[in-house]
Length: 334
Ligand code: UT7
Image (cartoon, rainbow, N blue to C red):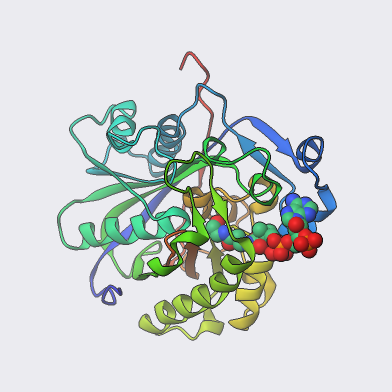
């Protein structure tokens, strides 16, 4: 599914926020009870440490803190829509987003969850941006929030080393395609025949992943989707100035960049410090890129993701001149 190239009206990114749990779990910490090592994990994935939420912190608390930070980054106090992309909602029913809206003092605002696993943020960005360009709403908080520690088997060394908890958010506002931060085009896809590759099997608690097969599917899917989204906005793949991919494995990101013939320095990598945070990984990587001033305002940027479903998606945008705001994990009382 592809959205038409934006002409005139567009959703424009105006704020960027994050919330990471305070507890850090290093590879050495994991190696104390799993048959693994820092060397194996770091050389195979690029991950050195990840964050794990405190027992009292739900996905909603992480999402609300990141959402509040994105609003502060944009200098706003409200919005018309709260959209939470998550694989790990606090409850099966109801959705997480209405509670997030109420934690943000935005009761009355439209709010819903979107489930597309690691592609969730790009899917949510596409939906929110379409609602804004259609005139359904003026502004939207798009939040990727995960608490994978609730579905990760601590005794499974093939997954326990990968995932982390956290949340990242952007504020989108109605503007024009000429503005820095404009979402210009999105490309979404899925293949349900691969549902067994990343799944919490029915009746079970923990995620199971066939990592090598996922790896093999992820690279061509992200490359093809990036090519489609770039072509739609008239960019040669080599003209992409910032490629912000889902942070699953540094080797996947490097393989995608190589196939697109992009120099490694155009790749944004943030997984060393936070691991794979699924739907939160792209907004966390965007905030990292903004913090490090990796991209100039207006730079040609592509977000690209692949994950369970199977699902994939990409978005082409120009880089926004925003300063990210980081909020701490709320304490038990807050
Ligand atoms: O976020 C959604 C999308 N997810 C992804 O994109 C994940 C994609 N997959 C991956 O990133 C990689 O496949 C992994 C990092 C999960 C695994 O890396 P790999 O290079 O594909 O390793 P492998 O699964 O093929 O395993 C190689 C060996 C095996 O041993 P044998 O059979 O060769 O003796 C595993 O048992 O490494 C072993 N192994 C480990 N050894 C030490 C697996 N996990 C570990 C571990 N520590 N943690």
